[in-house]
Image 1: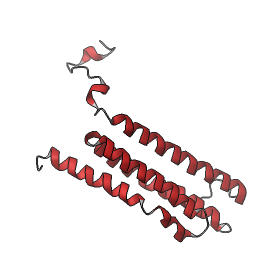
Image 2: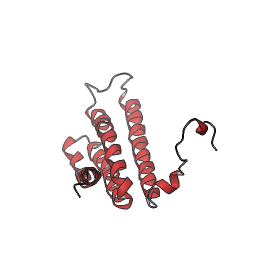
Image 3: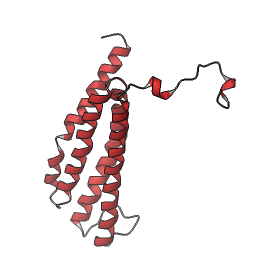
Image 4: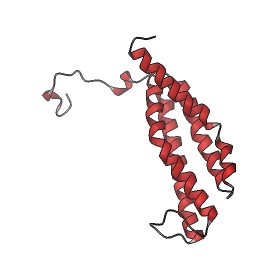
Length: 152
């Protein structure tokens, strides 16, 4: 018996028996997203140094390229919590499909950033294919919700 488990009558569950067998792919998708976010953060830090943008200044009046680098990171952070929620919901029922969709989304954020890093904001749309992954996990999450409500 685990310490503290005597305080409740809940049966102990091994997480490996609760999660779908392919959930390991999902975990590696999360790790891939962490690498992507770390990469974007390092690029902002390097751009701060290169363009002499001191903390806590978010954007520069003088360095358009810095603003593009900062914006690529900031925009990714703005959508990341929602992606995590939908990725997790979808992955609990469809782990392999969610992992593929998640990998598409994460990879697209790199394409988005690399396009933005050119200093031409329109090139950020190089990552527009990420909507396949993002909307895919949203649709799967809706389907899971409807399944839980007994609609399907």
